[in-house]
Image 1 (cartoon, rainbow, N blue to C red):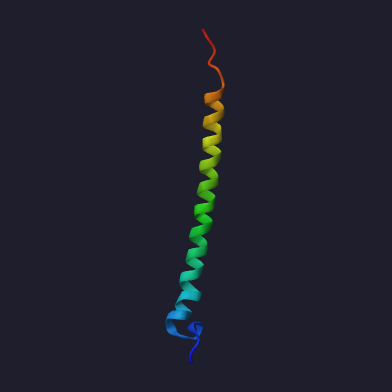
Image 2: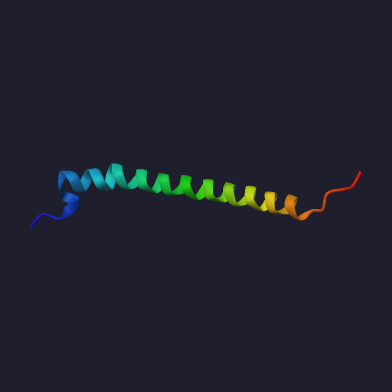
Length: 53
């Protein structure tokens, strides 16, 4: 029986699809990190009392 990686679809999956998935996951992780930083900055600014003028 032919192994999946030896088929045309298997080669496409391992050579094209899997690297795209990994790249997309890296992009998602980067965006989540940036979102968390922005939320932390927002929380810090909301925690500071405003100066009365």
